[in-house]
Image (cartoon, rainbow, N blue to C red):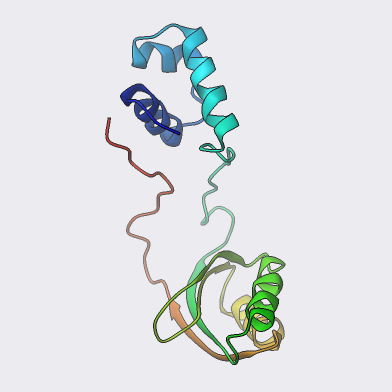
Length: 154
Protein backbone atom coordinates (compact mmCIF):
# COMPACT_ATOMS: atom_id res chain seq x y z
CA UNK A 1 0.00 0.00 0.00
CA UNK A 2 1.36 3.40 -0.99
CA UNK A 3 1.19 5.93 1.86
CA UNK A 4 1.02 9.67 1.32
CA UNK A 5 2.21 12.21 3.89
CA UNK A 6 -1.28 12.48 5.42
CA UNK A 7 -1.46 8.71 5.91
CA UNK A 8 1.95 8.76 7.61
CA UNK A 9 0.92 11.66 9.88
CA UNK A 10 -2.30 9.84 10.71
CA UNK A 11 -0.43 6.64 11.57
CA UNK A 12 1.95 8.58 13.82
CA UNK A 13 -1.00 10.16 15.62
CA UNK A 14 -2.77 6.82 16.03
CA UNK A 15 0.41 5.23 17.40
CA UNK A 16 0.65 8.02 19.99
CA UNK A 17 -2.98 7.52 21.07
CA UNK A 18 -5.34 5.25 19.15
CA UNK A 19 -8.30 6.40 21.27
CA UNK A 20 -7.97 9.99 20.09
CA UNK A 21 -11.35 11.06 18.67
CA UNK A 22 -11.62 11.24 14.88
CA UNK A 23 -12.71 14.87 15.19
CA UNK A 24 -9.43 15.71 16.93
CA UNK A 25 -7.44 13.74 14.34
CA UNK A 26 -9.22 15.66 11.59
CA UNK A 27 -8.31 18.99 13.19
CA UNK A 28 -4.66 17.97 13.55
CA UNK A 29 -4.55 16.87 9.90
CA UNK A 30 -6.51 19.89 8.61
CA UNK A 31 -9.19 17.61 7.18
CA UNK A 32 -12.84 16.97 7.84
CA UNK A 33 -14.01 13.94 9.80
CA UNK A 34 -15.23 11.85 6.82
CA UNK A 35 -11.90 11.59 4.93
CA UNK A 36 -10.03 10.78 8.16
CA UNK A 37 -12.52 8.03 8.95
CA UNK A 38 -12.14 6.67 5.38
CA UNK A 39 -8.34 6.72 5.65
CA UNK A 40 -8.44 4.81 8.94
CA UNK A 41 -10.78 2.19 7.46
CA UNK A 42 -8.49 1.87 4.40
CA UNK A 43 -5.42 1.39 6.64
CA UNK A 44 -7.25 -1.23 8.69
CA UNK A 45 -8.59 -3.07 5.63
CA UNK A 46 -5.15 -3.16 4.00
CA UNK A 47 -3.72 -4.81 7.12
CA UNK A 48 -1.31 -1.96 7.79
CA UNK A 49 -3.12 -1.40 11.09
CA UNK A 50 -3.25 -4.91 12.54
CA UNK A 51 -5.09 -4.17 15.78
CA UNK A 52 -5.49 -1.73 18.64
CA UNK A 53 -4.15 -2.58 22.10
CA UNK A 54 -3.75 -1.02 25.53
CA UNK A 55 -0.24 -0.72 26.96
CA UNK A 56 -0.40 -1.48 30.66
CA UNK A 57 1.87 -0.12 33.36
CA UNK A 58 4.06 -3.11 34.30
CA UNK A 59 4.77 -1.78 37.80
CA UNK A 60 1.06 -1.44 38.58
CA UNK A 61 0.50 -4.95 37.21
CA UNK A 62 3.27 -6.17 39.54
CA UNK A 63 5.28 -7.44 36.60
CA UNK A 64 8.65 -6.33 37.93
CA UNK A 65 11.04 -8.71 36.20
CA UNK A 66 11.82 -8.42 32.50
CA UNK A 67 14.28 -10.89 31.01
CA UNK A 68 15.68 -11.61 27.60
CA UNK A 69 16.52 -15.24 26.95
CA UNK A 70 18.67 -16.50 24.12
CA UNK A 71 17.66 -20.08 23.36
CA UNK A 72 19.55 -22.71 21.39
CA UNK A 73 17.71 -25.60 19.75
CA UNK A 74 19.38 -29.00 19.32
CA UNK A 75 18.37 -29.67 15.70
CA UNK A 76 17.64 -27.14 13.01
CA UNK A 77 14.99 -29.20 11.28
CA UNK A 78 11.60 -27.82 10.34
CA UNK A 79 9.94 -30.18 12.82
CA UNK A 80 12.05 -29.12 15.82
CA UNK A 81 11.92 -25.40 15.03
CA UNK A 82 8.17 -25.51 14.42
CA UNK A 83 7.68 -27.52 17.62
CA UNK A 84 9.57 -24.89 19.62
CA UNK A 85 7.57 -22.03 18.06
CA UNK A 86 4.29 -23.80 18.78
CA UNK A 87 5.22 -24.37 22.43
CA UNK A 88 6.35 -20.76 22.92
CA UNK A 89 3.04 -19.36 21.62
CA UNK A 90 1.29 -21.04 24.58
CA UNK A 91 3.48 -19.43 27.26
CA UNK A 92 1.82 -16.28 28.60
CA UNK A 93 5.11 -15.14 30.14
CA UNK A 94 6.68 -14.78 26.67
CA UNK A 95 5.84 -11.36 25.28
CA UNK A 96 7.97 -11.57 22.14
CA UNK A 97 9.83 -14.34 20.32
CA UNK A 98 12.22 -13.89 17.41
CA UNK A 99 14.21 -16.39 15.39
CA UNK A 100 17.70 -14.91 15.22
CA UNK A 101 21.02 -15.52 13.49
CA UNK A 102 24.25 -15.82 15.43
CA UNK A 103 25.19 -17.85 18.47
CA UNK A 104 21.61 -18.71 19.43
CA UNK A 105 18.42 -19.62 17.57
CA UNK A 106 15.70 -17.62 19.34
CA UNK A 107 15.43 -14.50 21.47
CA UNK A 108 12.57 -14.30 23.96
CA UNK A 109 11.30 -11.35 25.96
CA UNK A 110 9.77 -12.64 29.16
CA UNK A 111 7.87 -10.61 31.76
CA UNK A 112 7.04 -12.10 35.17
CA UNK A 113 6.30 -10.98 38.72
CA UNK A 114 9.72 -11.86 40.08
CA UNK A 115 12.56 -14.35 40.33
CA UNK A 116 10.43 -17.14 41.76
CA UNK A 117 8.02 -16.99 38.81
CA UNK A 118 10.93 -16.80 36.37
CA UNK A 119 12.52 -19.86 37.96
CA UNK A 120 9.21 -21.73 37.62
CA UNK A 121 8.95 -20.66 33.97
CA UNK A 122 12.53 -21.70 33.20
CA UNK A 123 12.50 -25.05 35.00
CA UNK A 124 8.91 -26.18 34.45
CA UNK A 125 8.16 -24.77 31.02
CA UNK A 126 11.01 -23.54 28.83
CA UNK A 127 13.57 -26.21 29.69
CA UNK A 128 10.96 -28.92 29.06
CA UNK A 129 10.35 -27.86 25.46
CA UNK A 130 11.72 -30.61 23.24
CA UNK A 131 15.02 -29.68 21.64
CA UNK A 132 16.03 -26.82 23.95
CA UNK A 133 19.73 -27.32 24.73
CA UNK A 134 20.86 -23.94 26.08
CA UNK A 135 19.22 -20.89 27.64
CA UNK A 136 21.18 -17.71 28.33
CA UNK A 137 19.24 -15.17 30.41
CA UNK A 138 19.81 -11.45 30.78
CA UNK A 139 17.88 -9.51 33.41
CA UNK A 140 16.68 -5.95 32.81
CA UNK A 141 17.85 -3.64 35.59
CA UNK A 142 16.16 -0.46 34.35
CA UNK A 143 13.82 0.38 31.49
CA UNK A 144 15.24 3.39 29.64
CA UNK A 145 12.82 3.47 26.69
CA UNK A 146 9.63 1.52 26.04
CA UNK A 147 7.76 2.18 22.83
CA UNK A 148 5.82 0.27 20.23
CA UNK A 149 5.52 3.18 17.79
CA UNK A 150 7.28 3.12 14.44
CA UNK A 151 7.88 6.77 13.64
CA UNK A 152 7.04 7.49 10.01
CA UNK A 153 8.47 10.51 8.18
CA UNK A 154 5.67 12.93 7.24
